[in-house]
Length: 176
Image (cartoon, rainbow, N blue to C red):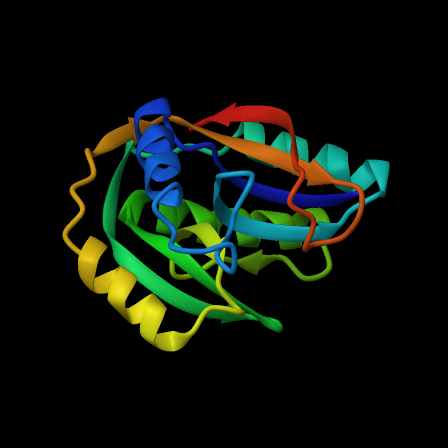
């Protein structure tokens, strides 16, 4: 099973993102169907011993209280052969936590944990969209206001296909 540790966006942020996704200009913009802020991709983990060590480590993970999620504009990223439009998130506590998770995962025996930087929520795949259209959309929406929100738990998500699957299952939540 492919595992990712991340944050499920609070309902208010999720509603704002869905409203933004409805403003894409054509079918070439492929909205992301499952919204989450990935912190660390763990990859394929099937060993019960590694899963137990990972669970034990995540239960002991502590932060300095709730983390504030603040939108920090949009970004266009190339990930493998895809170009994605993402909402950048400014959350120093979560960035620090993602590095801790990567270290914890290595200690638990995960082969290649990948800490996600910069922190961002994928909004759409825009591989087939003209660069001028993306630029114009960004100019129109660059000053979109987002409310800050706080979170106090991370979620372990899984999928059975591969790392590019958009259907994730929330396995368990860990307070920090």
